[in-house]
Length: 109
Picture 1 (cartoon, one colour):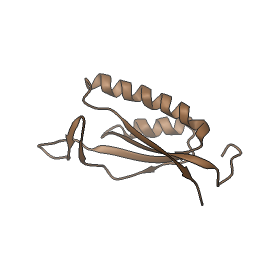
Picture 2: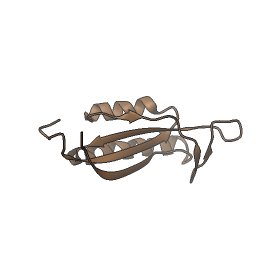
Picture 3: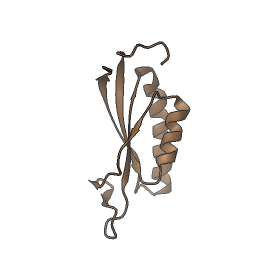
Picture 4: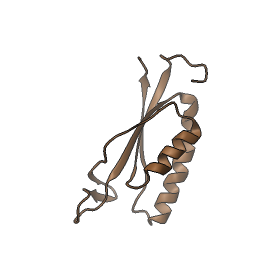
């Protein structure tokens, strides 16, 4: 992992994206060489762009991926995620986009 020890500080990223963008987000992470990621079940809920409950009344769902990366990868990751967010917002006329939450973490194992 680029000379970093297993207990080196990391930044934890929760990346939420419109359903159907799984492959694009995963390819982005792999292109940057992130050390790993976990993909959770599809999320349902509501937010500033509406409700997504994957049913006929409120179609759609949100994908989620967690990754813990060294701080040195933070800016390249955010640059790519911002570009993808702009693309998604543009093609959906602002109806869809990414949500990215980050917080510091300490990798213990």
